Length: 124
Image (tube, rainbow, N blue to C red; front, side):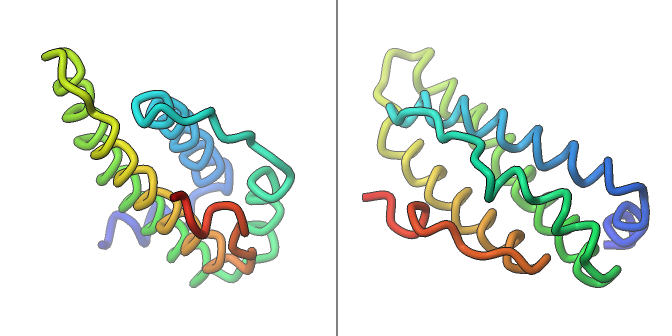
């Protein structure tokens, strides 16, 4: 937790880079879930400007949230790739991870004053 608090005081570029890295992982996840890649639209691209106007506490929450998403995505993607390398269908678990990613990302957006993306509310 101390590391997350210290990281949140780093330049905003660290948070923005983590945001972009997670969306690159999400592209790989979408492929494994047999979904079209999600466009990086204006609402997602607005994250840096939301951070600029966010308080230090909001930035800390954002950093912790992004770290949590990273901690979920890394082993999840490895597991999904292992499943597919064994010739098995990883669609259902990939879709479950996709939904978790969206829920966590929406929480990060809301923490810095953004809004929930309407199309990410229900991926059925």
